[in-house]
Length: 106
Image (cartoon, rainbow, N blue to C red; front, side, top):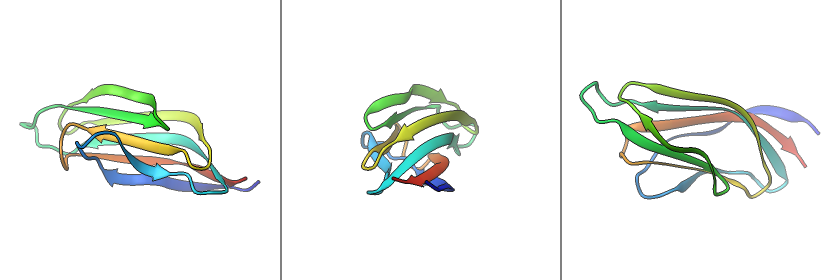
């Protein structure tokens, strides 16, 4: 089973509810190893709430992210084929997520 380092998701978050930012492809398994969330708003912008879940189970719940700040999480979370990485923020266009890890064939 070969493991390939990979960017699993890199996107700007929405405020329309928890939505999938990445889905594990059929025949694959992911190990999420790093999660980086950034707030690109100016110093005068409001803090925002961030929510991240793995297939519906909260990983980061209601984290308050100040303008210009970065949240990082080193982890080892396994996602099976068809599982989703879901994320939400209460702002539009100010919060981005970058998730990386390894992808393995089943």
